[in-house]
Amino acid sequence: MINDVHKHRMAIFTCEATRYFSEKVVAAMNRLKGPEDPEVVLGPLEVTHFSDGEFVPVRGATCFIIQSTFPPTDNLMELLLSMDAAKRASANKVIAVIPYFGWARQDRKDKPRVSIGAKLVANMIKAAGADALMTCDLHADQIQGFFDLPVNHLYASYDFLGILRKMQKADPERFTIAAPDMGGAKRANAYAKNLHCPVVICHKTRARANVVERIVPIGEVEGRDIVIIDDIIDTAGTLTAAANELVKRGARSVRAFATHAVLSGPAYERIDASALSEVYVTDTIPLNPDKRALQGKIRVVSLAETFARMILRVYNYEPISSEFPL
Image (cartoon, rainbow, N blue to C red; front, side, top):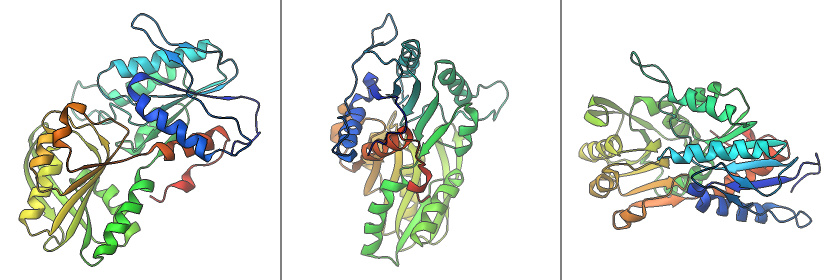
C-alpha cells in the first residue's frame, strides 16, 4: 500500500547489469501495492559509453536506482553517473539500491599502504548525489558508518530462515549451523540462536590470499547435518575446504547458504567437486551463464520481493528493522 504521506511520486530505474533483478522487484511491487495505487513501472534509463544517463522527467520524484556493484568497475561507474544524472534532472531524492555492495571486504587498513575501498566507494556514492542507500548483507555491519547518509541494511536471513527450518524439521537432533572461519562466527551464532541448534566454528589458516592452508572444526561434527552460513562466496576455497574437512570428520551431510555469489576463478569447479550437497545463494549477483553445466548443486533464492517490500516501506517513511529476525 502506498500511503499519501507526501506529494513526491516514485520512480524506479535500473542500470543494465542488474536489469534481471530490477524487473523482478517491480513485478513484486505491483503484487504488493493496493488496488487503488498506480502501477509501478521500470523507468527508461539510457546509458552510453560517452555520457551519463538520460531520464524521462524526474523533477520532484523520489528516484530509486538499482545496481549491484560486482565486477567490472563499469557497473559502479554506471550507477554513479545515473545518480548524478537524476540529481541534475531535479529529482527530489535519489536512493541507491545496491543489492551487492562491492569493495565491502576492503573495510580496514590491515597492513601499511593499502586503501580502504569501502570508504572510498561510500564517498563516491555520496558525491554522486545519493540521499540514502539500500543494500543487503554487508561484509561487516560497521561499513554503514562509512556513509554520511541513511543506510537501509537488509538481510537475506528473512528468506533463508524459512528454508532452514524446513531442513531442520527432517532431523532436528542432527541439524547444526557452521561458520566457515572465525570471521563468520557472529553470523553463524545468530542463525544458530534463532534456530535453537548447535554451532560449529571452523578455524582457518591461510598460506596466502585466497589459498587455505588448514581448517580445524571446533564443535561436534560426527553424524551431524551441517549448514555453513556465509555472506559471500568468492573463489569458494574456504567454503569447499571447510565442507570437505567436515565430511572427513564424520559429518552426515554439508550444505551452504551464502548471500552473494561472486563465484570467481575456479569457484564453480570447486563446488562441483566438493563434498557439498547443495549451495543456496541469492540473485543479488547473476550466475555465470557459461558455467551452467557446473551449477547442479546451486539453488538460487530470489530477494526481489524482499527488496520490493523494503522500497515501498522506505518510500512511505516506514521502519524496516522489524522485518529481519537476525
